[in-house]
Amino acid sequence: MNLEIENLSKRYPNGVQALKDVNLVVRPGMFGLLGPNGAGKSTLMRTLATLQEADSGSVRLGAIDVLRQADEVRRVLGYLPQEFGLYPKVTAAALLDHLARLKGFHDGKLRQATVEALLRKTNLWEVRKRALGTFSGGMKQRFGIAQALLGNPKLIIVDEPTAGLDPEERVRFHNLLAEISESVIVILSTHIVGDVADLCDQMAILLKGEVRLAAEPMRAVAGLNGRIWEKTVAREELAPLSAAHAVVSTRLVGGRTRVRVLADGAPAAGFAPASPDLEDVYFGVLRGLALDRKAA
Image 1: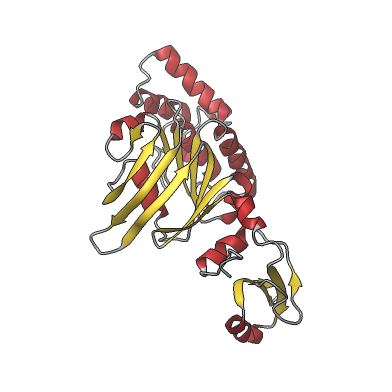
Image 2: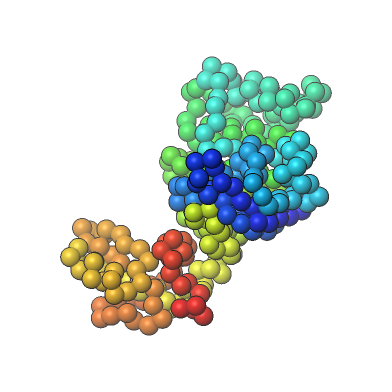
């Protein structure tokens, strides 16, 4: 079952074009949706989750018309928004049981078994009787995934799930998402390039409501082999260098600026070849650089 998005557009009453002719095909597995704040990611996620309407276009999840069959979509949807409310004095087990009831689990034994299985899957069984208000950020995110998995969804949407997590929780959450995505479509909306590099075999970069790149991350990175060059420069050298070359990114290292440049050959004296990564792809797209060698 694929998710097929065709010519999806959305303009808000204030005139902001949040989505413009978005076309994507998402197959089962982990799909990374990258873009800066304001790129349209959350608008696209809310539209797919049937929380708002599009102006035009179509979205199909297998045989389901997502824009016209909201109830059918919700039966097979798991959703973890960027911010979701929890009752701080309620235990994890009690709230998940309540949410399971709302999801249609009316048989008590089945509901109990489902809640236990999900709490174990998300490594929350040992803390099931603790109030949610005492949970760490990572534990709350894992609870969010537990509720999103109720009902064996075919499509799971997670919006900025690792923002604010410490490194250990981030790794734990990555492992959980990777396990989940083996059999369903998981759309990971984020501005953290490393999350997509670690998890996803499909991706798209959204900018100003438009898809600027849709590709397999490894192939997109491989397309930059031999074309990324690096040099550490003083601050006063940065402006003239940026004017003369296609700068992909800059980063402070030891008080000096490390510059990465896109070029088919050594751009200037002192530049050394560098191994490309997904950040080069991402920042290159955001800066409007010609990443395709044929277009360069």
